[in-house]
Amino acid sequence: MADGLTPSQTIGPFYWGTLVSSYRADLAPLGVAGERIELALTLRDAEGAIISDGLLEIWQANSHGRYNHPEDRRNLPLDAGFEGFGRASTDATGTARFATVRPGPVPWPHGGMQGGGLQAPHINVSVFARGVLNRLATRLYFDGDPALAGDPVLKLVDPARRGTLLAKRDAEGVWCLPIHIGGAHETVFFDG
Amino acid sequence: MAQDLYRRPAPGQHPPHRVDAYKSTPGRSPRKPAVALPQTLSEITGPRLLGERLVVHGRVLDEDGKPVPKALVEIWQCNAAGRYHHPGDQHDAPLDPNFYGGGRARADDEGAYQFVTIKPGAYPWKNHHNAWRPAHIHFSLFGPAFATRLITQMYFPNDPLLAFDPIYNSVPEGARSRLQASFDLEATRPEWALAYRFDIVLRGRNAIPMEDEHG
Ligand SMILES: [Fe+3]
Image (cartoon, rainbow over all chains, first blue to last red; front, side, top):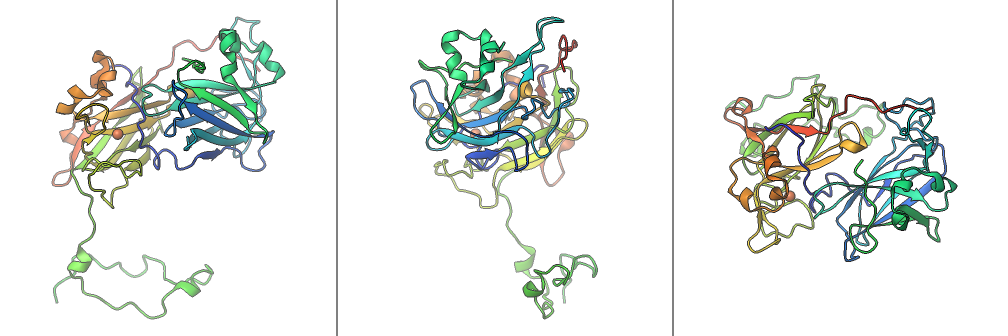
C-alpha cells in the first residue's frame, strides 16, 4: 500500500444498525455534574431539503471545561460516566437529538506566552451523510452566552456567518441548531 | 451405532440448568434428563453464510508509520449478493438471513485488527445509467482525537468497476490506490478463506507540541 493518508469516502446511506441504532444519544447519566441540556441538530442540503440519512457526532468538554482525554492535563475534575462523545442519526425530519450537560470553557492555546484566554463553551460536531465525501466539522455555541463576544474562534469567522454556529433555545428549552451543507445559510465548517 | 460427528461435552463443563442461587433458574429448567440422540443430518448440518469467506486484516497507523494502539475499527457491508441488511436497501437481490453485515473490533497494541467476513457483492445505485458500486467494505475509525476521525471504504484490487465509480474516483488519482486492499496469500487459511490486507493511515502529529499550555 502506498504511503500517505487513507483518503476519506462517504458514509453512504446504509450505516444504520452498525454505527448507530438511535435518533438520540444520551451522554450524561444521572449524577454527572452540570446543567442538563438537550440538543436538536437539523441537517439540510444546499436546497434547504431535509437530510434524513445523516450521522452526527459530538465531542465536548464536561461542565468544568475538562476533556476526558490524556491531552487535557489541566487540574480540573473528570466526571465518572461522562466521556463527552455522542453519535446519533438524523430522523425523517433531518434531526439528531442529544442529551448532555452544558460544557465549560476550554483554553485557547495560541497567541504567545501571554496569549491564551478561554474559548466560549462549545460542542464540536462531525457531519457525515450520503454525498458527503469528507467529514464536515463544525461547532455549536450557545446563543446569549456572554463569553461569545470574546471567543477567539468566532473572531476567525465572518461576522455575517457567525450566527450559523449559534444554537437557540426553543419553547421546550431544547437547544436547536440548523446545519446547512451549502445554500444561502451555509454553516461555517472548520478544517482543524 | 455410527460414531457421532461432534464430541459430546464432557461432564462438568457447562453449568447445570438449575442453580438455585440464580433465582430465575428453578422455574426455567427442565426436570427430566435430555434424551440421548445419536447425531443425524439434522444435527450435523446448520446455516452457513453465503459467499466467499475472507479474512480482512491490517494495521491502523499514523503518517509516521506508528501504530494507533487499541484503535476502534467499525465496518459495514452488503452481503455476497450485493444487498444490505437495511430497510432502505430496495435492491432486488436476496437477503442472507445469517449475514447482518456489521462488525466492530479493537485493534491490538500494534494497531493490528482482523475481521472474518464474506466478499461483498457489487450493487446498483442509480447515480447514473447502469451505475454499479464496486465491491467495498465501509470502515469507520476514530484515532486518538476529534481531528483524526475518518470514515472511508475499502475496495478490492483489479475490480473492473473501479474505473467507472465516481465515489472511488472522487479521490485524487495519486491517492486512490490507498483505498485498495491487497491480496495476502500469507494470511489465507487453506481450505477455508482468502485474505486481504488493508492498512489504514490516520493523520500524524507534528513534532512540535502546541506553543503553551494553560491551567
Ligand atoms: Fe456501500
